[in-house]
Length: 387
Image (tube, rainbow, N blue to C red):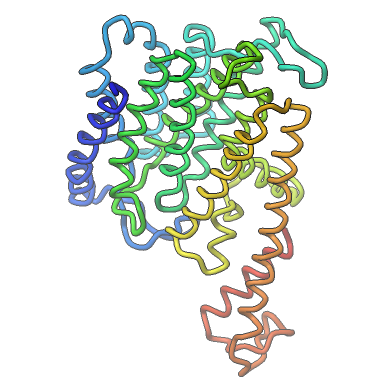
């Protein structure tokens, strides 16, 4: 019951503060301008992480005991570091190196002082115990990768908020059932703030989460994923909340950011581009090419992520050697299916375009030379074929 109180407090604070934050940024012209990789319409303020974090701060100071604050100080301080890094990046673009230094500092904090560390491969490849000098680097790498992976999905109204809410609900409920009430309370507090934010971030969004929120929440989810994997593996096999596939379950909960990051990494490397170079090859960009609006994309991708969580729950008695191939294989199948459907959809658009003149840029396509919509569709088709 107290977790509901935590969530309600952060929700109310965030819900009340967000309109004021929107007004302030709009009045001072601190907004994201559409164009390039920015696919929204109109000038919209970012940094929605500010009211979320204020709501979380207020709720934790109001309801957490001194002992709980002391116990969670490393994790909350690391999240605060990522909040500051994201805020700086939203205000003045930071270099990739400076952002990485901030992420490394936060990851080191939670690993060395927060106890967020992988100590095993949990039977994968026949490996169990990991020595500290191996487990620490793997833990830091995992946290940084998952933090950035979550940040990358923040490209469509409501998507990052909905995915984080789903993950926080799963982790929070599991932590509560496992007696890890502090982590359950932190999850509930952030979930409440995110719900308050989503009231203004749902399409058409009046404010975006921005790096201010996405990096902080991404670090929290990454830490929770590691904590879940480690805590779940340590449970007795007879426990009703035990997932035999610890790693597979963690991957399933975070499947959208993990798969999207892996997908664009592979695509960019295959094209000879830097895997860090920005483009419009994310999953949400591809679904948008099929004509779906922001709210539909968010509902589709959140539903798919929920399906993977359901798969993990249904297969909770199976080990990683069985569940991990199922989770990864299903993700790859859906990704390939998406590529096929998008390509077919764009080709259909081209076929249905009015056949008036032969476009010199695309000799095989009889379309109006001055039709911007058709021109854009053809360019997208060419880009997809090159991918």
